[in-house]
Length: 367
Image (cartoon, rainbow, N blue to C red; front, side, top):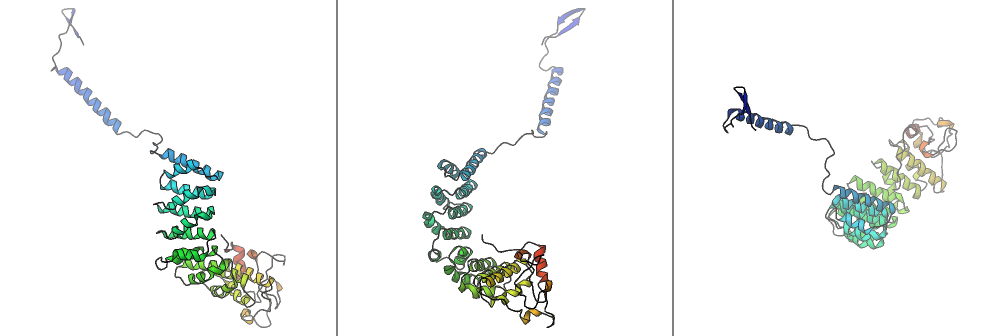
């Protein structure tokens, strides 16, 4: 840039400075430091505010999940949706199995069989569960292979699916033969309730001898759910089990197959610390009486407790012949067992009735 200076009253162009001019050097140094400070200041500032960038493929997975929800809602197998989900990750493949099971379209069976051989265990579990819901008998062969899956949970779900398809218990046992010790029972016992009671009885009694509390409870449930007469001796023993659920199931089963002598066996459950066994004992006694398999009689001496012979009047003025299995409501009439007031000869069931009135009954129910 040309410069001018005033010499002897007139303007004359200033001579050009050399590259080593000190003024230009200091000006350039200040500009350089300014640029450095600007860069450093911007680098230390907060990051820009805004939504994070989506991971690659996340948007595509969301779209596939939306299509899976639509598939399950329409209850119709869609090959394009299934192929797109199969190309996704393990989580998406597991969601595909879940959607196909909910849809219930047998056209999805082959896709589920493919997922049943997936390398990821969570996918195989969802596929086994979905095939059981699907109800296609042609899936029995694939499920029989899955019953021996290295993953015990997958094997257990496959056995339950086979039971839902109506495969005989004897065939399932043959498929499980040769598994390591204890593994057959681990996969079979939880689903015994889904097989006919007559064929499940010996395996359920075998399950009662297991150390695993969960398996013992499932074996007891299989005995009581659709009880047969041959199960009555085992059910009577289970009335004193340490698990309140088992005690409740045993009482329930005896209500179906028990006899007169079981009324006295059910009586101690009225003082149970949990409401479930109390309720089931009352219901079982009522079924035994109503069906004519047991007849009410006067309370036994064992139930009199510390009361004297002359004092045998229970609550609400019940006389000595009042059966303990009956219940009364606020108006003296019949009431639901959940608010039952058992009439014992000496009123010893009152604590049990108060527990029933103060909290929900832990009833054992069918799945």
